[in-house]
Length: 114
Image (cartoon, rainbow, N blue to C red; front, side, top):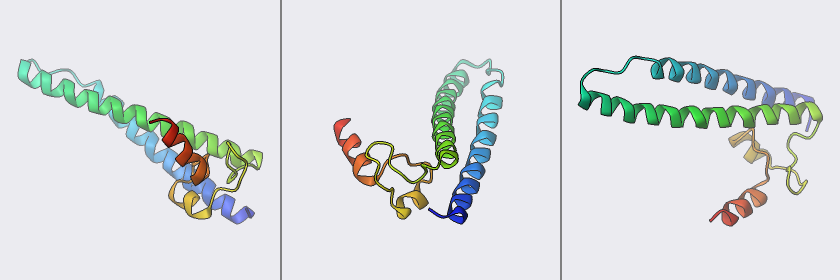
């Protein structure tokens, strides 16, 4: 992969990481809000908190995947499947720039997980 493409992917990954970090800060602030004194409202707030916590965990997972992709760029292994060593298609990288697996390996792992 040429240097310009890598620079584009690096910038895209860093931009997404900043966006996710901003969302995580907002989620944390929302979760720190005091609970409502009204019991039915507290139940609704707790359900909302659970959704926010789930979104926070998903965001943290994506940040870890982005950091790993940035490390692969620095190591010179970005765009190479970490499982089989084949190239990850440009289409896949455009759709999911932090993808560590080629489409074949991703599909095999998804099938194994069932």
